[in-house]
Every structure is written in structure tokens, then in C-alpha cells.
Image 1: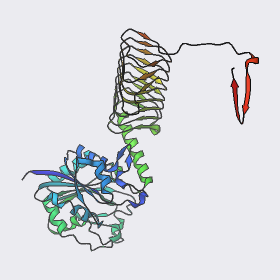
Image 2: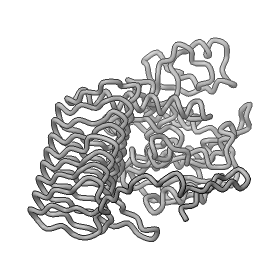
Image 3: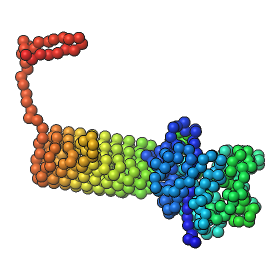
Image 4: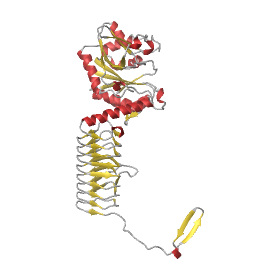
Length: 436
């Protein structure tokens, strides 16, 4: 049989402490659901075969994950061991490794999962755990090792002796199991504990009693194993993720002037020597070139690709926009659903009117164009190269290359009306002026 690596993502819990009508694992960090992040991390770790065990509000989880995973269902919440049991029908008849992840632990790195799997395979371990060292381990299962340092068992907090509670190495809740031996161990699980639940951690003890080798690696960054139980923890994890992402960009040559007030989502590419000013938000999938200047108070939304030396200034929103090298959108503009060429200047207050109430349409602006202030582009519309658009224009038709376009009403000035021609009529609280 083919050797496989499978992931099982546990996403069946109620999450009552969130105080929400939604499934806990569908709450978002940086625009992405917790469980979607975990599945994405598994994919980035090279695991393509993923089973999500769902239960409470399962339809919400299924809507988020779609066809990216297979589903197993847990009707009763009887502990983590019972949750994994629901995935057994998918695991039977397969050889290889299964990685167990949690849908509310979204910050684990793909590299950590890869390291866990590599150790399990290299050291021929039937169970390999991810552990962490906590100065205050209260609330966590403790790792019990033998004299040689091998993992003997995991004892949950409520079942631990006073001596065991002093152990600082804790169970991080992420495992890599041999598929066949996991199935056999799950068959032997019993709910003989204070909680009356089937503990997945008991699998380690069962394997050890059978003489099977088990091991563990200590996670390098404890923030990777933090879970979400309430909204305060959700916000805390969002801050951790923000710092992690911003630091990574700075290490890669990007200047972020105020890390606390810069929000760069996952999967954003930014070239070297680009400067990000404060209060800037950049959404997932955006690509920004080198030597660009972004912000302050800029909002770079999904689907944007900015060339080198682009300037996106104060109070500018950009969405689904391709902007060519050297182009400037200095301030107070909205550029949505558009393509803008090279070395074009977009004046203050300019917008693309991309939505007619039914569909989105595109604005195309060529190279070396100069767009004056307060211009409205009524999409779909195409503006050529070397074009000058007069300030205050509303552009409804295409503009050919090398043209000046003026689209505004002629100014009309009238002398002040003589006082005797004014007749004020007061009606209630409204003052009406008659010109008859």
C-alpha cells in the first residue's frame, strides 16, 4: 500500500466562551477563519489529504472549507480521543502518518509540522508529540518522561498528582501518529478519568505499554501552540500574527515606520526598500514592488499588484488594481477594478466608479497620463497614453492617446439679484427665497 501523510483537523467543539452564535473556528483573524488557517497551514506543510472532524454548527465549517477537505462527523462531544475516532473510517487500510491538528490553534508554522513528521519518520516513532516548556503550566497536560528522556505518558491537569503538576513540559496538542497503530490504540481507549472522556493523550500510554517507540520535540516558539477560547484570546493571537508578519517583511528589506499601527495580512509580497507609513492596511494576495511608498492611512485591498517605485499616499484605497512602475496616487482617491500604466499621476479626490448597482466594471488608464483633481471615471472606460484629464471632469467615454479631455459644465456667473427682486417667504422653520 502507498505510504501517506494525512491530517485530521479537530473542529467539532462548541466554543461556549466565545459567547457567539457562530462556530468558534469560523471566527476570523486578519480576514481568514481560524479553521481555514489551520487547513492552509497543513497544505503548506505538504499535506494534501485532510479530514476535518465537525460537529457543532458543522454547516458553517463546511461552508468555510468547502471541498478542500473530507468530513467526519461527531454527534457527541466525548473528548479528543473520541473526536479522532470519527476519522477512523477514512484512515483504515492506509499506511503512513497522520498529523492531528486543532481548528482553533491557527498560528502553528508549516515548518514545525514538517519537523514533527520528519522526526517521526526518521526515528521510527509510532507517536511523536509537540511539546512546550511553560514556567506556569497550569491547565495543561504534563509530559511524563522516563530516565532516558522518552515520553512515557501525558497526564491531564485534573488527573495529575502534586508532583506531576510541578512538571513544566506540557502537551502542545499536536501529534504525528503511525496510522495503523493509532487505529489499534483508539480501540483500547476508555473514559476512565475525572472528565469521563476519551483522552487522545492516553494513546501515548497505550503505545508505550505495547513497547512501541514514542517521542516528542519541543516547539521553539510557544506562541505557535496558543489556542482561541474567547474573544480576548482571539485579539491576542491577531496581535501576535501581526508582529510575526511585520517582522518578516522588515527582515526582508521593507521599512515599516510604526509596526503597532501597520496591518499586513498573510501572503503579501513587498519588494526591498519599500516604505510603509503608519495606519496602513494591506490585504492578502497583494504584490508590491521595490522602492514604493505606501500610506499613511492607506488601504490596499485584495487583488492588487503594484510595480516598482509606486506611491500610494494618504487616505487612498486601492482594490483589484494593477498599477505600473513609477505611478503616483498621492492622496484621497479610490482606485478599484482598474489598470493604470507607468508614470501616471492620479490627482487628489479621483475615483473609479466601478459599480453600477449590478456589476463591477473596469477602468484602464495608460502610461504617462496626468489626471487632475476630483475626476470621476465611469467604468467601463479606457484612457490612452499621454492623456491629460482636466480637474473636475466626469469621464464617461474612452479617451484616445495624446489627448486633452475636459468633461464638465461651463461655468456661469450671474450678477447679484437686486434686493427688491427678493421676496422672502417664511413657512414654518423653512426660509424660502422667491426669484419671481
